[in-house]
Image (cartoon, rainbow, N blue to C red; front, side, top):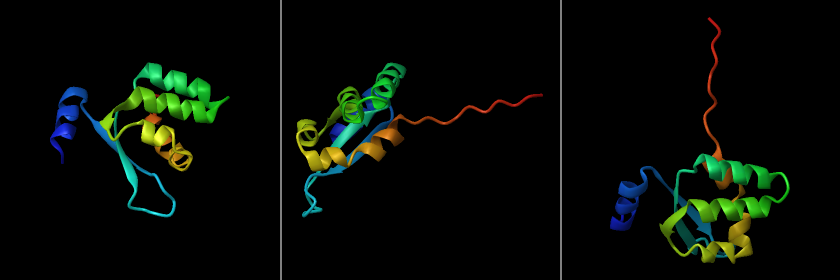
Length: 103
């Protein structure tokens, strides 16, 4: 684990590592992004955008959650890389459901 990642963990708490393929013909070409936990504001904004513009929702999520790693522009400017993000971003923004128990 890199010193940079340790510094990010100390500053932000839990940090997710997102490995994004950059080239469909070369699995070795990847970008590694470090993302912080989403806050309520980010979840709300991305949730509103997701219904009307999924690509913009992903872009906004990345720009708000990105805290380090490879340059974010490597992913945002690469159509193949950007298209691979859907499931990872949805997973990142999802939360556990609360359980209501009637007594």
